[in-house]
Length: 196
Image (cartoon, rainbow, N blue to C red; front, top):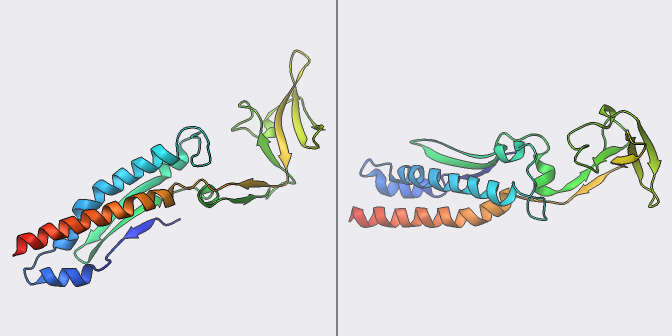
């Protein structure tokens, strides 16, 4: 999934103003402003939306893979500077967390949704002494017989799961694009003042 770009918007027009002096002021301003703000945006997204417990606006961090994939990069030359932020090298399932959607099984009849910490991160077939039983509410549940003769629920079986959107990219963009724009506006103003 591609991140967003703070690219050469209006750069050619503004660059022409400074071309008389042979200066790459616009590119230099972008290379000055973007690294700091992109780093702050990544830190904000990770701390605000990709760590802590799962809530309507954030995801619990289990492996850290999703948070690590949220990153920024800056590329450029004399022709232009491009700043990108988002899930630059993210796993294929990033979109379901960012935009929400329905998850359906692809290789079996049911999804196994963990009910306990013991079951998280494991496949149902990894457990021994299991059986499936319908609950009073009508859900199919995989139970495990325990050593003491009791039973422990491990998974609920679902034909699909509706995932709510828990975006990190959009709120980060909404917060930092105005900040970056203002930083560039101020840098441009300072450059124009110094050019007189």
